[in-house]
Amino acid sequence: MSKLSPQWEKAGVLEAVFDQLSDALVLYDPEFIITGVNRAAEKLFGMTSEEMVGRHCQEVFRCAVCEPNCGVLVGINQGPSTPHCTVRLHTDNGMERLVVMRTNQISNGDGSVAGVVATIKDITEEAAPQKREMIAESAVTREMINFVRRVAASEATTILL
Image 1: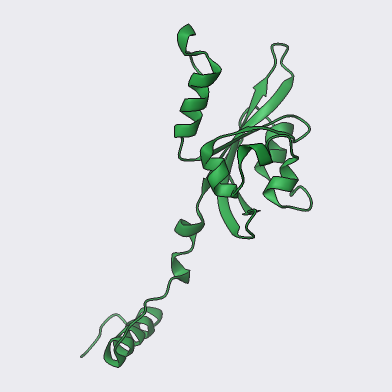
Image 2 (image 1 turned 90 degrees about the horizontal axis):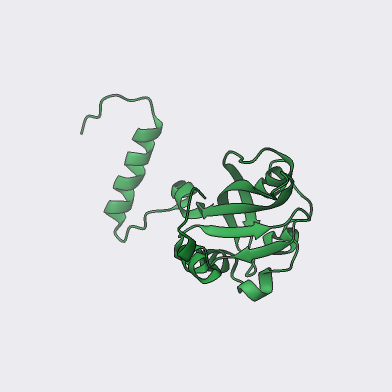
């Protein structure tokens, strides 16, 4: 963080700020143990903060092994900040979510890594517009939609009606 006034450097103030973020915020230590989450993370994972804090990230993210490009792993092992990476998470209710993750290292005064903060944005709905189907009630509307799809898939540049 760039700079906070001393009166704003209180845990309660920072918690209020974190809970206002629309993206999930997950803090974890170098052993991949989750040390803090915000409300958006609770909503994304379908778990309370009490259920997540103190657990290994694999238990919460529902993955068997660390994937090479996982933002959590990259955040610990690489530089202070990582580019966005796309990860598939499995939530507590069994749903698979496609997310973009970005991590930043938190360092101790001596330069060693104390932990990592990860911001996680759920892009499941944005990434799957092709999965949405238009439902047409009438046969004429369904026929017209199918015609438009065939024309769109063809190399035709002109349509004669």
